Image (tube, rainbow, N blue to C red; front, side, top):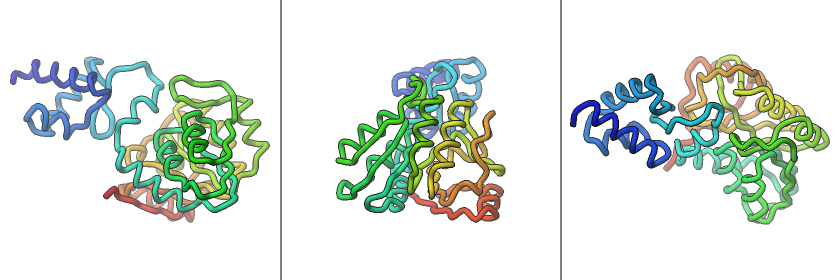
Length: 252
């Protein structure tokens, strides 16, 4: 297959499937992963797709992190969720942040627990209420790009609640802490952290070494990180210095 035809095929596959991994593309087209990665770099430079950790997604408007990441690392996210829900206890009040990994956490909460949940993401509220848990939405300004709520109403509702545990997501984790792509997201996450007795960060490997414009918190705001086992050494050392427990899960 000629290079330009191969690249058109890559773009078609990425668009048709709403995202593909490098491995999927290499197997489908019959070339090496090195060739696929080189093609993806060229196609991104031409604004024909967007590269992600381990693959590519269709070109869409900037600032749609949930849509661009929801098709990646699904098995890893499920393994993370299975470990994360071990932190929930009967009769607790639990905050659920937003994001694709947090949806997986909500799906794993045992139905036989008596749990009061507060979340700013309607999809998470749906999952928890379907499992019989008392669930409260924070309200606020709904963001179509992230499918969640932000703003003063969101933050005020969070401040009115004392949670036993928070399941927190993040856009990026680096040596200095957690960061978010926009200011309102960072504010919402800080409010959640400040009003929770225990903070459980759930993050797959694609979030590591990512640094975004708005700082959420330093590592010492976290009690437990649940991830899929690929924490860079510099970040692992920073977490250890802050006293953060790390649980590294792998999917079966």
